[in-house]
Length: 634
Ligand code: FEO
Ligand code: CA
Ligand code: CA
Ligand code: CA
Image (cartoon, rainbow, N blue to C red; front, top):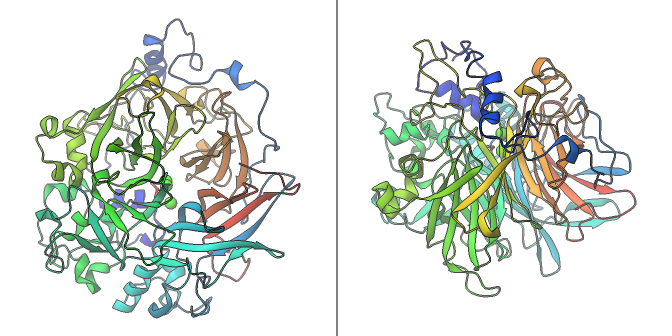
């Protein structure tokens, strides 16, 4: 491990490196034909009602015929790109809205290409690694809330070449992550941040946050610094996001495990630490300089993270709230919808290989303008169970079924879901709910370990030790492309406990493969991509798909180019490339201006000097995209 530059690993790769489970000595022994490729096709045929080939099987949501229906997209498909900048189709323009390190307040330190920001000002600038975002209209102003998921130490600690050598550097890193809230406006020179707007705010790893819901005050959440278990510092690894119907921002704590470590190498981790990937070595050496992250000194601190935190963007003095009722896992994002009965439904994914999908349904109902504080306090968690026959069930994480208390279900949610038979998924990333049809979508980004046989003949497992056998919505072994699963709740009611499902897209590469890895018929030479991740519907019901995949443009990924954003038509199945990011970057996070004429898109961890060109640091940025003719784009 000493020879690896860990600063450039994805979180998935970081977990892989620290995985305490069996080594990858069986990695090359992928399942043989009988189980895998042709076997997969057979599996579809086995239940399909007369369907002859993949693509007309009922598990695949689109057919070749549908995919040739007249396009609803008003733009030309963008070819792949491999360079260091952003591209959009003819008739569209883009400009940079904000970069990592840009000031949110006029007292912010000036950005330097060669010196690390001082910790005193690191929370007065736009944080690093933009991710989930939402735009709010507040008193006629436009306010963006956007996550700063993690850090790129070589960029953020430029003075030390990325090394964490002191408490000062930990302090800088803690302040560069979390959430940014800022007002934006369009002037003659384009979109920009309103520096010093009264709405501007940073929420960091040091911000005081109230713990609410069933787990608040539970013994597991009590620490010496907070003996009541009700107040925590920081929201961490803020990945995707969500917006409540009442206009608050939901920030989702994903790879929180990576911040914890132990200065005592003999510290015995409880089983649930292993399940959540909490290890003896933290990714940024926090544990060496801030005892709160040292599990040998503060073993309960990790139980206080891994939740969804609600922030009111209209009130920068408000205390954010960790909503433990929504469970504790590696939260990707949160898609809120109000059921016909008025109940709040929140769909969520747990992004790790072989983890599960979840749904929360409130006890009380939503009334516009009414009191909403209880809606994410009292409710029920469910986990998804998919069947081969195209049906599925949201299984309640009840005290009876799990043998756990309500508080335990909210803290050790993975264990609760395991006990009720949740379906292991290929890394659930964003969930999106169609605003014009009763259906939900989840991007299952990839799972290199699905159906991989080890030397002893057993299959690779998830963190709970469950073998990751191929299953209905995750039907391919060693899944390197990903898929997008779609479900239709019974009676068009998102609160219903049953659904039917199909695959909106099985991502693949038909120019390289002719088997299941070619993908579903709505994949073609003109729209190749891999590893769907960010997903958001626009108001017209178009699904915007963002990727966080392999951009080598070689082998399995030939013809994919850089990571990108595509538009997907839920009705015809058509998918068309709209935007490409600079090489090395992930495209993640999308929201719209109030008039829908501008789309804001996040560019995370570019590898090359973006957006300012040669000789400058690569800075994660949000770009504004608009049509030259001024028409809405979403
Ligand atoms: Fe932060 Fe699962 O992406
Ligand atoms: Ca993501
Ligand atoms: Ca990802
Ligand atoms: Ca990422």
